[in-house]
Image 1 (cartoon, rainbow, N blue to C red):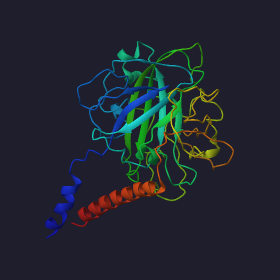
Image 2 (cartoon, helix red, strand yellow):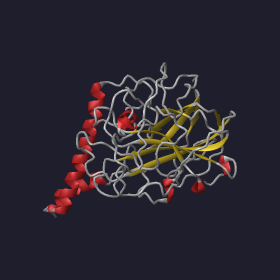
Image 3 (cartoon, rainbow, N blue to C red):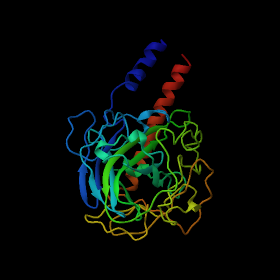
Image 4 (cartoon, helix red, strand yellow):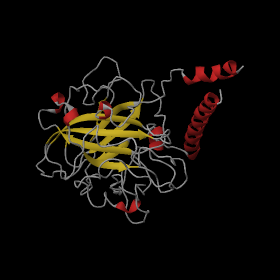
Length: 345
């Protein structure tokens, strides 16, 4: 009798879903758009390293933590400058929205110091963190929910960045299953850029992937992920010294930025002076603060410091946001029901 009851649930659980996960579909740098290759499709010229699976990287020690699932060298190394505006768009081959809404968005850079980036093996890269955002100031809504609502993640490259070739590692960590150790889902993506200018800034702290995270880090294994007011601690190294002090302000306790999201990258971006890891939006150059979370306890939120991660305006309504949360709750309830049915068999 149980077999007949559980069969429909199991069938649904294993149905393929085009919206299950995703990848970086395009990057916009100072108004110029570069399209990413669909995983496993015939590649075309792009600065975004192509992956072979839209599913997550699982396990913090997975070698694909570097640039994504079996990421391949890209053919292009595209121009950028210190202070350039960079926007990352997420989706999937079915042209559907990013499906998750829980967990941080983080961005790292690493110099391609042994060759040009189109020939550089990222497994030896030394990464420094330039941006991180987690929860909004309500203490429960994540900025990842805005990615679900079709908005790009927009940030500004450090203004003191030395010239040369760099990999930009942009990452979503989906924590909807992080109540169990090993449940976190990692979605890293690497874009190859060539930075001009004559600055001379160097990072004071770097990390390797894999190696920067552990599956039991506070920001990766989060038993209380759905508790209202849970203060999030970012995994990995602190935000680099190349970020301005306003971007690195710890008073938001990892729940940055405090200013509302609106707008997106302008068609032609003018870098904000001093906003080395701040994100920007159309018509706005405000900066926002980010916690220098590296496994240490986050500090209580305070007013007066902000770290902007501005995402392109898509006229998202409150009703749609509510719908996204409802979809997530339904998904969570389904898997809990499946788990309970199996455990009681």
